[in-house]
Image (cartoon, rainbow, N blue to C red):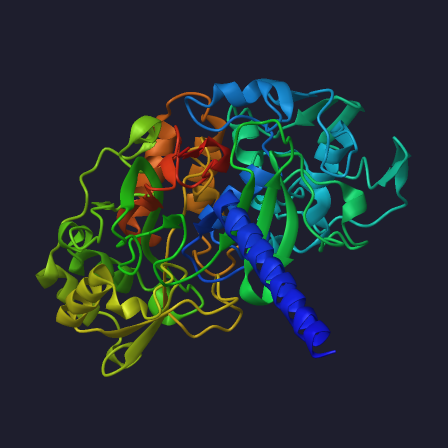
Length: 536
């Protein structure tokens, strides 16, 4: 009996050892097979169209939802692949046409049709204008405003219409006309050759209606798109999101883990100018030449300080943009004071004026004209929608900004990212907000549209008929390199509607032992995961 007992114990030990070895081997194999990407931002759901940072939302959408049209100068190969939906698109005067490819399928196995494009563009129009970015992105469409120039009221829900065995809210916005399953016509209020670039946005992903809840606000489980990757798991408590390639035969990274961490972990780490990542021995750092976003101060025009032109100009003149940009960790910052960067095609649309130089003496004179009780002996709290550093005040360029504002006579304290704070709220008492606007579109007017009546941002700009006029004039002439856009740029800059301090380029670090290269990326904003080349 004792011999049998010992034999059973031995067999059990061997069996448990085999299980442990098998699990360990599988874990190691699976770990090696997963490409982990540290998104370097305050944790957010990567498909949150209103709350996720631009680089997170654009990267996720590019991978999972795909695009309407190719993005970038050398990305035309996307026009024939699974990741781009339209086989053709063009505009004649105020009418635009789109052809949907045949044989493009959502991850649930259903073919994508023109009705899905229509639905995806209008699904957020059932909300109030300030609740979503949709109204700003669709601003070119006829009927998006009423006869008085006010943004239209939210769409009213009507009886759904069956198309291809799917029920859609179709025909509600007359300027979007579905001709058949593969063709659409758009009626614009003005000519705009950039129309398709603007609506091919991560804020307007093409989605299957049947995978959303009845209010179109949430996914029944995980997001469904037609891109190269599908979502297979999400550990929401840890903000870990897992993707798997759709076509097992395609020679691209098979399994992707998107996550957020402020420590130096991940096969690929989006740095965004922080100090805490990209320091490992095998890390190779890449700075993309394209501009990711600008950075600077938005003003709360609900407040007396925000409304005061002397206060805004004093802020702008007090800051040394060259010195601030020099404090970038990876030399990723470039001095700037205009909305459009002095880079690539966009430099043709910017105002022909030099970047603002620091003039502290004049800044102090202007600030002294502002009622002292509004700012003197007060600490101005500045919320941020920016770098994910635990304390944004530790960033060298933020420290420099604080020092220079102190020399002006203002006491400020930057507040690290606060969940849900992505714009000034109704009744908000904060005067300044530090953030920036990304350049994920070929439309020179796209970011200027955020400062219009009816924008998602309700309090970040003045009620200014002249600005509205200049914007309309710029948009009407955007089909050519336009003096109108230069005038808009100059007006925006001269009036300090936003005080821009620098442009930021995206910087990445990657593990060179595991990864051969990041591939031919056009922009770190839309990081094309499938272009990553792994070491053998």
